[in-house]
View 1 (cartoon, one colour):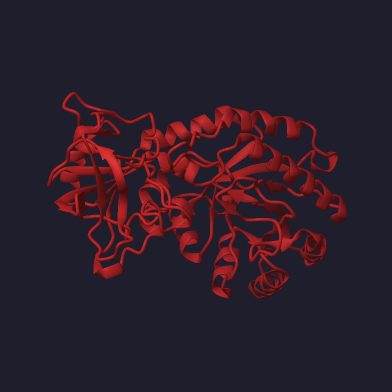
View 2 (cartoon, rainbow, N blue to C red):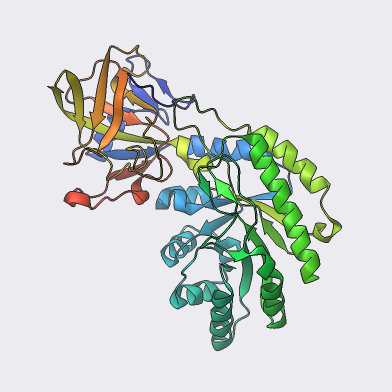
Length: 409
């Protein structure tokens, strides 16, 4: 038997043992959708998560949503009214962000390899471009000159440090992301001299960390770096985007990051900041921390079989919707995401089974030898922490299966 990750504590069952999502029975939600697999996102949990962040963080720090985590349109429309800005990473995400109702002035666009048409779309809309290279800066200035528009340009900095213990390191050493810190002052002076509206720095050192001390140390280094760069440039940045870093507990032994500790340390860091940053604004850019726990992936058991003494629950879902839960999205050692039988939520385990998907590949495994209550054909299996990097981060077209349905409740 292999353990699974911790189920978010907000979830409960009704009197019959059926999992409730947003106050609705999981089976009723599947019936309303008309089919499974189905992603369900709980709007109350999303709202509460933003409120938790605001209660923990210094009041002067803005909250930006990194919409790559989940760009589902109804969810974006909700988040547009809850956060202070959106961070996008493609022309398609820019279009979706604008459609959500988020003002262009509160949208920033990062990511290497932006095409000229994407640069032009952002400049035309009035969004901020986080420049990833000297060459991208020159292209943006040239496009803005042709359009007769003053572009809003920030510089993404590749810092000399990374976020210790992070699942994905975005800084330190050679990286395709951002401009090496040593080259930033020259680029910013070029932008200012060209008449651009310089919007500041984007400094993202890593993501998916659960250690509050490591996050706080990285934020302190980030503020110090921003001050050093500002002094070298001779101008204060209007905004310093501190990146994200706050992760969620996916696996056995993981514990939730202490947001209050992160906020307290950040308040101390900002209170002691260099005077060059006295009038600068600050932001944190979070994706999965805001949305992961609010999402549940529901998939129905279509077969129950035994092979060489091992029981398999075969579902209509799989890695084509939940690549990360299958262990094929950046993890070195496969471990089990939080998982439950939705119709017997909270019951004691009765057997050890492997929950697999419908694809003809041994990689399609949603639960590896996990202890669950007895489940049969027709029962729903729930995969938790499914609100981030699920539907759009998985190969939905693989084997012609197609996308899962999505629902905001």
